[in-house]
Amino acid sequence: AQTVTQSQPEMSVQEAETVTLSCTYDTSESDYYLFWYKQPPSRQMILVIRQEAYKQQNATENRFSVNFQKAAKSFSLKISDSQLGDAAMYFCAYRISYGGATNKLIFGTGTLLAVQP
Amino acid sequence: EAGVVQSPRYKIIEKKQPVAFWCNPISGHNTLYWYLQNLGQGPELLIRYENEEAVDDSQLPKDRFSAERLKGVDSTLKIQPAELGDSAVYLCASSLGSGNHNEQFFGPGTRLTVL
Image 1 (cartoon, rainbow over the protein chains, first blue to last red):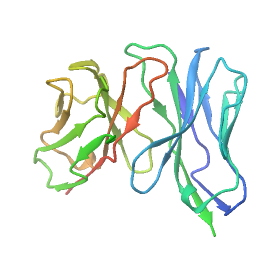
Image 2 (cartoon, rainbow over the protein chains, first blue to last red):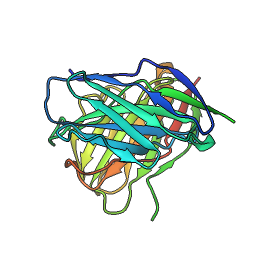
Image 3 (cartoon, chains in turn purple, cyan):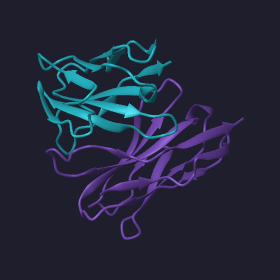
């Protein structure tokens, strides 16, 4: 069974600094998607960034980038120039790339990020 | 364009009472998901609909939980009777389809407290 592990329950970063959130996963599949979602106190999950496993290039979205290490099954999120609005719970998630009954997101337990002014 | 709408945002009930949650997906989204999010955990899929058909309900506790999406648009999730352990956030999400490139958009969730 696929599992997603986030080993950092809480992280803290100073405003304008860089922080990296860790995520590891376990799967026997070769083709899949990985995601980072942000969940602020409003509870609305927002997609931050997505990585397709067959792509070697790491995904980037403005201040957000990932370090995808397929062999190590590692998928970390780097937030550069942290802003107060980045404070939230961050979830790493996995999804098999093909559809059907197995097409569902599997989430980690989350990392609570605090941004200090 | 409106996002995924859920109501109510908060619900407090006593154990053994019934409760229902409503979700209206983004217009045109054929796929609808209900997730359960326990405190300090990530969401877990309860059920997924393709239009009006439930195509993955393997994680739905069918003894007390039920869901419907009769016209393939909005959906209702019901618990009857509620137990203390059902206290959690219930998230609804929708996507255009269930294919590879279809992003799931989440609603704000309903926080249920069972006393």
